[in-house]
Structures are given as structure tokens and as C-alpha cells.
Image (cartoon, rainbow, N blue to C red; front, side):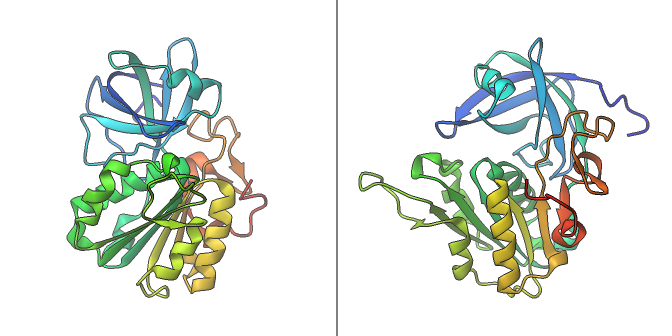
Length: 275
């Protein structure tokens, strides 16, 4: 961003707040001017007097006037953000990093494998691909959560299933007898037994907790997916957003400016990629 102040913060009105799960909320924001980003890039979202943290938008990158950001309450800043209400004002700076290479995905079967709040970047990617659905051979969505209550975007699953080219699968780690749950029970990788794509040619995109990404990637490799066709959205400790603070160094890469999207082939030999 040579022509832009990387620290510039735009004011953003909070238009709505949706409680997705007991620990995850989605915030509908209207920046003071249109905000452009590419699916997979991240932003820094701030609260005046509190601080800021990195998040990947969860809405299509074709939506420039308003954006959704889905956030888990997992620390001091996110706890304060969860107290934000409709009518409040937040700050946005960015976007940062490199997004998903959609030109490579076009014409192919694309598999999205995600868990927990990792579904947020995948929702952004999915909504963006739906905009150009005929550019893709098929989209398989494999989403997981700990319990039925922890599954986010539940009200949108019906819409996704309505697309002829989308195959939606979901599972929860556990559910009680009182839960109304029609999906599978088990870790998200069990869904890979039901996919109907040629792993030798398909693209896979993985996002979620590190342990899920690790074993999700290994399961995809076992299924025959190529290392260079597995895309990982690495959620490291990114602060400045453009490689100055060095908090997100990952071997020879900076997650913030070289990623956060990498192929497994790119980073497989770097140390502690799953930490």
C-alpha cells in the first residue's frame, strides 16, 4: 500500500449485532466510506481507548459499503468488542495481507474445511464464490463445531444448500439427547469420508483452531489432495498488519504481509506452524 497511510483508521457505525453462539457474535459495520478488500485479507478492528485486534471479514468482498465481522470472545479486546451495541462506533484499518487466489480456484472443485470461528473467513470466501458461482465446478462446505449451540451461521445453511453447486456437510463434536441435531457427530475430518470430489484435482481451504487445521491438513493429504492445492488461513499474532512489529514471524515468512493465506506446500517445512 505505497500510496496509503497504513495506520489510517476509518470510523465505522455498528448497524447490527448478531449473537451467533454463546461465545461468538457478528457485527454489521458501515465504514465512513466504501471499504475494499479481497477475500482472505484481514483488517484491524479497534475500539477507542481500548485497543485493536486482527479479524478477517466474514462478508463477500463484493460488499464495499457495509461489512460483517464475526468475532469470538477470547481475550480482553474481544471481550470489550462483545459489549459493543447497535449505534456504537468502531474503527477499521487495512486491509492487510494476501487473500485467496480465486483465479486458481476457478473451474475446479473447491472444498472448504473449517471449525469454530474459523468459519468466518470461509463464509467470506463462500459468499464471494457464490457471487460468481458459475466460475467454479463445485463447492463442498465441511463445517464443524463443538456442540449444536456452537455452530454459527445456522440460519444461512438452508440458503447455501439451495445452490445446485454447493454440497454442505456439518458435524459437531458432541451433542446431548436434548439437542435437536440432524448432522453428524464427530470431529470435522469425518466429513471428508463423504466428499464427492477428485482430491488429485480439487482445491481445499482450511481455517479453524490450530489443532483442527493440523489434523485437517493431514487428513486431506491422506485423501490424496496435493500439498500445493491445500490453502491455510494462518491465524498468528498479527498486530501492526504489515511486517513491522515481527509478532507474526513464521520462519522466513510474516503471516501478516506474506499471508495470512499460504499453501501447505509453502510453509510445511517452517517450525511451529501449528502453534
